[in-house]
Length: 108
Length: 113
Figure 1 (spheres, each protein chain N blue to C red):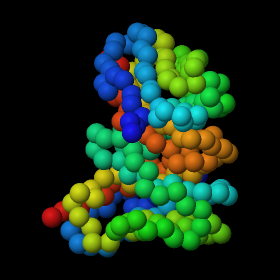
Figure 2: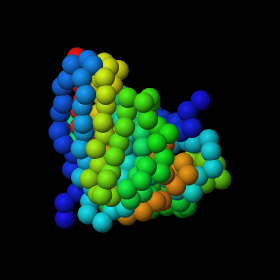
Figure 3: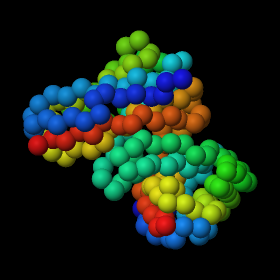
């Protein structure tokens, strides 16, 4: 069983829709990353959070440490939001353990 | 300022050859990470450096893989006797220290024919 599971694996929506991507993990963690990867591009860190909620522009990330669950929300989605979104957590101090990613496509 | 850079951006090689992949981290970042990403998968950890030393190399798949960071800045990932299964995007990341946000390079796409 993977230590981190994301759902859905693929998501297609229309411009303007509210998007939710979920991340569940099976081990105790201190913090979780949400990352964005564009096709052919590098990975960009969106959030690192250990409790509650963080907001940056149209992106909102929440985490419930007790329930081992985090969500990434995108409000007023736009085609430029189309990318792969990945959650990851630190295993020890050294390395990130990544989910398999959620491929998001926003159609105009 | 400059982000993490990786060279080459693409590398095509033949089975059995030796390859070197280079990572230039953000200046001043003490922690450096190598990951490998296969198509349709999330990245997988390979090795982590704190300064010049490899603090954790548990993700290296076998002894054909080796990485160095001799001066605590630039790192080189070396793969001997490449195999077709080594084909992937190799990502490098750096951070100011442990438990910090990691900054990723654009990756090197390695194709072994």
